[in-house]
View 1 (tube, rainbow, N blue to C red):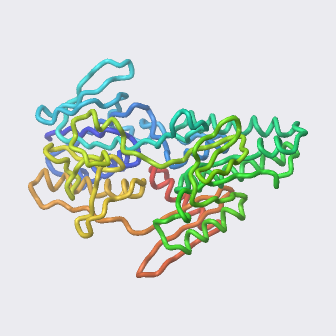
View 2: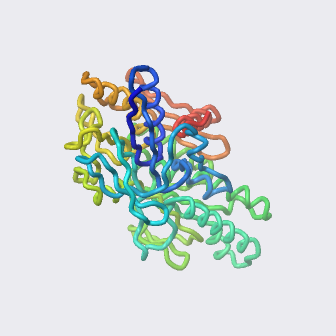
Length: 393
């Protein structure tokens, strides 16, 4: 049986689902081709990136070792450099910064996105990764220990306050989880939980502009119930010396500013020789083939994927990436046999939010109707989406 090598570059959500999809497609075909998958990633584990707010609020592990997820593939620890698509080789740097190469028959680029960072002069801590999440948790916990012994009322209130800058889904979930964990800690330290103040600073006129107004209103009501104050239409300019300056001239005394400013396509793409959109995503066709690079595909946050039916770009979320990956195996099989390949189709309107303490909210639109699920059932659905995204059974 002939063997083909498929190189997956990046073990995020799109990458791990691409592995599953490709394995399934080749097993189903059951022909003369055997697929050998090699995953290259800078880490030895899959990071459950959408759960970064969890270690910021409480101690816990949000990583899964690749060898536990895929015991039947080869995992190479390294950082992808340039792609030699004519020679069908990928150049990369290993963990010791030694330049190496890997040959491939198919290559799938899934190096994803990075979290947008504020300028260094803006202060605070950006929720960019595991280390930052742990720093956030240590910072607010230390502030609360100080507050327990603080006698000056204004300083006590400042130490018990957090500003979250950026009100996308990450900001919503981080603010709610922090409010819950801080109130829980307040009781342990014999601090009045009502003194905890978490401010969610939203540059938009309302929450969740991707959906209908009533969903944004419902989200804000839930956040308020759980101890989060939403401030609309302003941006955080800077955190300095415990004071958070807003674009409207107001200043919020806060012991910590957490930045959740959304995502950018991975900047490494600009050094790898791929054709890019103006926003920095890889240019692909409707079947995820990279422009001008035979046998190379790209999906997930790093790819500029457009629905041919309506011309809209996919958003940078894990649900889009996993849906793209589900088609990829069939696309590769079709290309291998010279057959028409499946084309991209936009994901349905479906969004989930967690508020901590097994509380959640789900919104979807079907048949022209808006459906909203809240409470414990909403949280169960949210947890299911997290688990499905990371192939957790």
